[in-house]
Figure 1 (cartoon, rainbow, N blue to C red):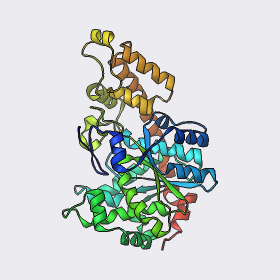
Figure 2: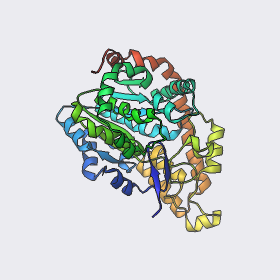
Figure 3: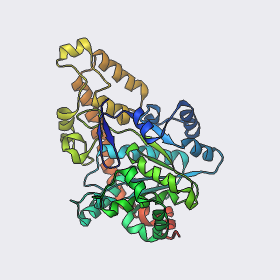
Figure 4: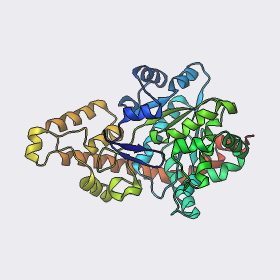
Length: 380
């Protein structure tokens, strides 16, 4: 059995998602939950319909609260880096859909403190510059600025510090060592940080739902251990799989692993074309003649997987691409060209939205309805 690693800081290997669910103690999203989501939202998001959003904690309880009129709220986050890539946007795009469908508040934590503690090569100035740029990319996804609060940990800590200390007092060193694998060489800042990451799940007395990639789930295990003792609900979570890197369907996309693994949000049309043509792992055959005769394998073909996850929402059109590639009617070069066009169109739209976000950033962080309310709060 091939091994793999999934932690908040490292994802590698050929991931067995069924095995990961068992290891993390989460639950698969079954047909009953999908039906309830469709009834609540009026439709399926393609990521949910195609099992890319695949695992959960207490999603059934969130839907119970919604159906009873109690409501819930959303929380997600981002550790700032020098360049966001398409994979970073995937959980955010699904989060935007949830906010639109349920009309709920959303809290987005920018974990500048955690990134500084973990990435020793970054200066505090580097972190600040990256955080500002990442916030613009996040705002460009299209969240409701009146229902969304984006905050940097280092700024908002003064509002939550008493609650943060009460939370930290309930989390032992043995717990964070067991959950995160910390040892005696881990700096004490990282050992303290998990207490802060659970704090936004306490921003409302309603149940919290956290959409995230499944590598972030260890934090929510810690939250669920301490929440009720502090007077809050155990958080719920809904997990995505990973957008595969260009060179293969295992692991996840990572800009730090090399430019050839990821499409950055800043990549121009020429860079996108070059990366897809040179690096995107193909399920095609060695020659055109062999491909026409034997067909390709869409299950291992990265361009097809990206189309399935993000770039072709229409099931009938995706089925045509799948069947034509499998039968050899669609060539590898043609499938790559199709993906290149989709990505460049997507990135062009994103860059335009990012420019507009420069005018909205104050609403998300300080001046919008929810933001102003949050800055007026303190938590004892």
